[in-house]
Image (cartoon, rainbow, N blue to C red; front, top):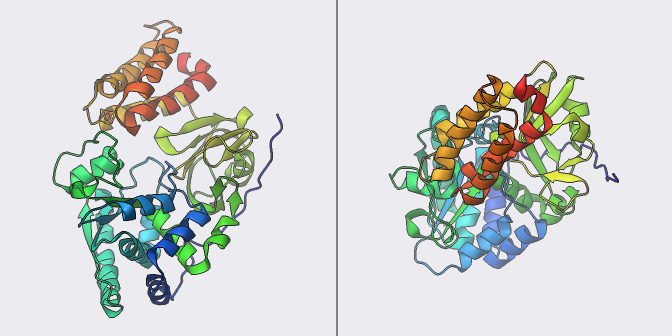
Length: 395
Ligand code: SF4
């Protein structure tokens, strides 16, 4: 298959220490909101949480929504297994996130912003409070009426889903809402809200500082810019790396693999498992627009070598989903349990191999009928593991 190989290229924007954030904030707040939105739109930045919605458009829609009260919310829940980059951004360069939140507030007309922090990241609270205090002092200096509050999550994976996050912030059980309406018109406290993940906000800082073109020039068509990747599993160099989008998975494995990589799970438990035979034709970027197969990702890249049982990997994911399903809708609540029990029954020989095909059909139903991304995405890892490593499911 013809495939344009985009070589893996490193970038260094996110963790680069910029000591002029006051200047950037001051300068950006003097621009008309429309100009800021246009800059973001022309950078083609897409949300780095995994869904890939255009950030500029999100800000624009919220800015245009008629309401007296609006909010800007930073999603720092980071619950996807294998992802550990947002906590580093908040530890090392929190002012980038705070600056972008303040600019967003100016653009959409909000006075209050929230950082919804994953419960397990409680240890970050004292330093974050210090950074927020210093930041707010400067907001006062430049007469920008904006306050940032911290909200601690209670550890449920589903609370990373934007509408479940709002419910959780409002003191209710963290369950996803029906969509539409979308947060840009009905979000936190039923008010229009921009919700961006930590890394997305760090990228907008880069755009405010260096301009849209600098960002746009990185990556490939439809997948512009760089992205942080949390690299883990069977790799001699686990860690966090900023790489340009559009690289082939083969190049990624050449760089991070241990020489014996048989599969890579792209995008955490809710993502896809790519077997060795597809490394060359798979590119990391937003859907359908690159040559070969393209996979979007929130940044989790787990490498598995030949010592790993893919049955155990799938069993582990299904246990995770079974526990994290909020239980609100039947396809997900019952489906996750059925899948979990089903692969065990096949492995023990209590069900025929063909039962795996029934389970694959079940995941298709879940994809179509589950209410939110959790239930819909179980099909991704399930089908990619079962279809590519079927023999390991049986023996
Ligand atoms: S898909 Fe799962 S997590 Fe989402 S609403 Fe339904 S039960 Fe809850």
